[in-house]
Image 1 (cartoon, rainbow over the protein chains, first blue to last red):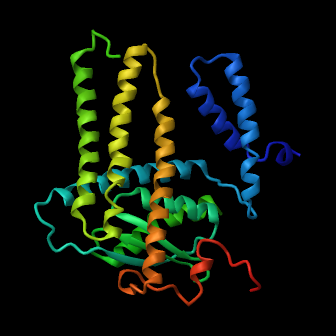
Image 2 (cartoon, chains in turn brown, green):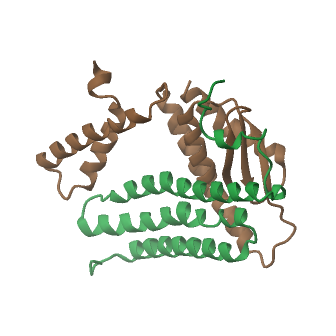
Image 3 (cartoon, helix red, strand yellow):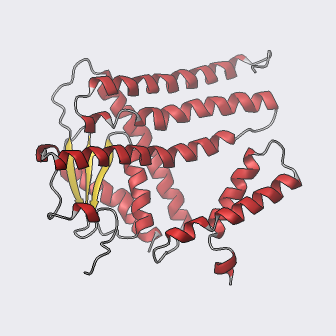
Length: 163
Length: 130
């Protein structure tokens, strides 16, 4: 019943909060229109469903978000330092193939955002049959370390969140 | 609008954040020039899109909150939208480049798909009979 009339409650709540945040003044009218828009919009992803599985473990999500923020700041500094070096020294950029256990499409989408938003790594392709992800790394020193980091730091928590 | 009575410490913090954000954006643009291959160049704009944008949004939040006399956090929405849309744009660019490179047989720049024909099935489960 709930699923039929409010298919994505958390998405609706997020849209409603955003609407409220952007409203010029927090009035009852703004809250009401926001609720209507949020309710309507939360039906959109129904068209994209693929045997959905909800995300769980909110605390782990927060920890993952903190870890991603930390990694992005460090990666920013690393790439900035790379750019400030007078001449490109012996830097090697290259592709790395990473076998993943992750199959849930939403989890893969989150992983794509994390990898691509981090300076220095870009998601290149995903082979669903073989379960192999290819990323491009700007400053490739140790391929095994890249595989270990992506799998340990991001894939492991995502497997639990989208279990 | 900058209020006339902006305290010095706030002016300093906001300026530092703005300059840091602008500096990162500049470095990212410089990267577009300095890197040589397409796949390297795609990395550069993420500097402006992540830490650079965060610094500028923080500066904007501080200044607007001081002006209004209450916390203004609209910029959080901008941050969330940036984090989710920038990767999508970059991914589309990379996939377009990859498609062309594989099509033209520049295998050297990208590993070949696991098997011929797997390319079309990328990103989504095969819809044909399994």
